[in-house]
Image (tube, rainbow, N blue to C red; front, top):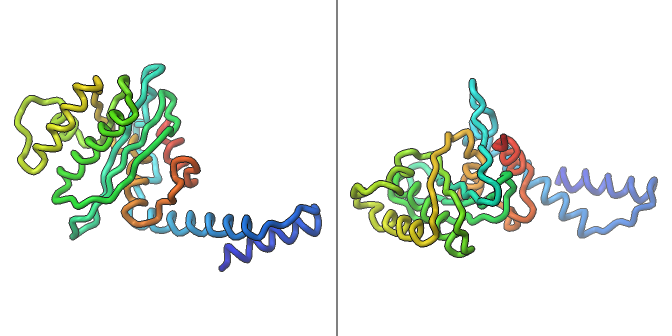
Length: 219
């Protein structure tokens, strides 16, 4: 209600002093958008404050990839004491600009399984978009090693790892580990999707907090 009153006041002033026509639908949309972003910020700060601050010491920003290549950042967020999680994959160009993304809820038995599921989602995205020069990036070093290792993976994620290797071979994908501070954009989307605060149009019209995370990741 406070956001709605604020935007009504702004629209009234524009109409009286600047003679700008008032579109009631636009006023309502702007109020709803700002209210949603405000609530999202409060929830995200309460659940994962580290997402919104730089790592101390050496700056560990998102590193630009080779010109003309793509990178897919992926991550998972899991609801404590449940088997519900959200996995995401963010497609970015060599400058870090967000091009596409997928965020979905899934039943997840363990953190390991969730991290592997996120890597698989990134590989599926690359295959669907017919990308052959792409690097899949995640902040779980053990899962990145599983994706390229010849060792037998744990049984709980063996089928997912097999899919990852098959898709990587088909598309010539590579894998890269990054510190968590350089993967905060994917982490934010995963938390927002899990909490039900991620807008439907988050790719084409990213929320301010996502824009901030993407900017923070760029080097």
